[in-house]
Amino acid sequence: MAKISSQDLGTQPISKLLIKQALPASIGILVMSLNILVDTIFVGNWIGSTAIAAINVVLPVSFFIAALGMSIGIGGSSIISRALGADNYEKALKTFGNQITLTLVLTLTMVTVGLLFANTIIDSFGGKGAIFEPAKIYYQIVLYGVPVLALCMMANTVIRAEGKPKFAMYAMMIPSVSNLLMDYIFINLLDYGMEGAAWATTLSYVFCLVFILWFYKSDKSELKINFSHLGLNFPIVKEITSLGFVTLARQAVVSITYLFMNNILYDLGGETSVTSYAIAGRMLMFAMFPVLGVTQGFLPIAGFNYGANNFQRVKETLNTAIKYAAILASLVFILLMIFPENIARMFTSNAEVLRQAPNDMRWVFAATPIIAWQLIGAAYFQAIGKAKPALLLTLSRQGFFFIPLIFILPRFYGELGVWISFPISDVLATIVTAYFLNREIKKNLIPKDVQS
Image 1 (tube, one colour):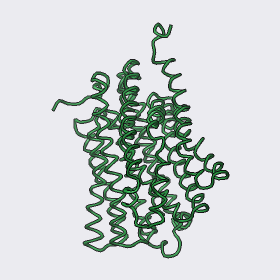
Image 2 (cartoon, helix red, strand yellow):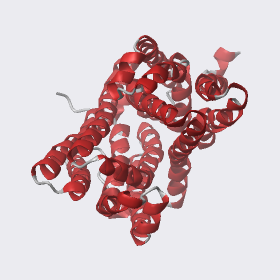
Image 3 (spheres, one colour):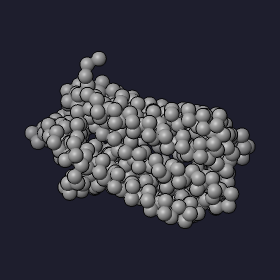
Image 4 (cartoon, one colour):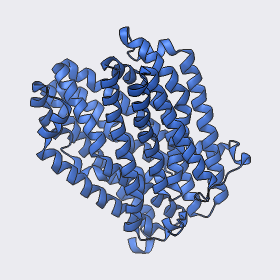
């Protein structure tokens, strides 16, 4: 097989290139989603339901710290893609070095604080009563590995920015597969309980990092950094953080949304409504993986060609990505409209939930066919380094429309108001994104002589 270069992002046919980038990303996202589901089943069956509750207490803390790595990775990868497109390899190397330093400094600081105030943090996130002790065991061990996870999440986006999607996919699959294997060994065979679950998770991060280090030491990577690249450069740090904040803010809004939804639905419909929402949320994670894969595949292609001033290819990439994502989103929509009852039965046998969940799921996914415009449009601004519109458009659906709607509409329509907030916010966010995207295309991607 011929050696793959980042320069392929600027030369290969867009359709072929987008599939090559998006397919591994989609598979990686799918494997990670399946890992979360199967891991929960293993822990629940081999340790007990209290263990599931304990892990749920810890995950928001550990994932938020690890999300710093993802944010730094996505912010820096946008710079790297554009730098490679402009043949500015020194800037790409300096950016990668700064990403490593930032990730280590921030995550190690937060982990230190997290360990010092472990009891307070666990209690605040719901680790009370019988949940506290297993949560603390899991928390302390997993937090040791969180900086490693953050480095893996950061480096994974850089691998994709180099135009190496298959290796990025392998990096996503290694911790998922190894975690399940070590769950079986540590929990089921050796009976290590919560310690076993925690060490299985932490060691899976280490295996992933070993693979990533091998990738960058081998001839597979074009980014060969040295110690001089690790020194922080303020302009680069500023650009990384401004672009990365888009991802971090999105993660924060998602967490806030879950907090509000659980409380509002519990007040309106009790545990049945909360369970119905949990099923819909789980399906969002699984069903949208191909669309998210196209979005991930789109980013390095658009960033590279924008950096190379090849605006015609940027426009073609944008149109192709929206078309592919829209087709996939429509297929998801059709399946969920036809088979919501069958899907709900996969999660529960509770009669009340089964009566409610299918209809709720239809509302949640009612506007799915148009969501491609919103996802790709927001990602476009992040890919070309425009942090402010990327941030505003990324937050528009949940932050500006959905959260206000779930407080307003239930006053008039009861619980139905919560569910119809999903398609309404999707439509409004898509309209806003389409407007700004169309304006950006006319301003920067269409030659002046064509416009006149």
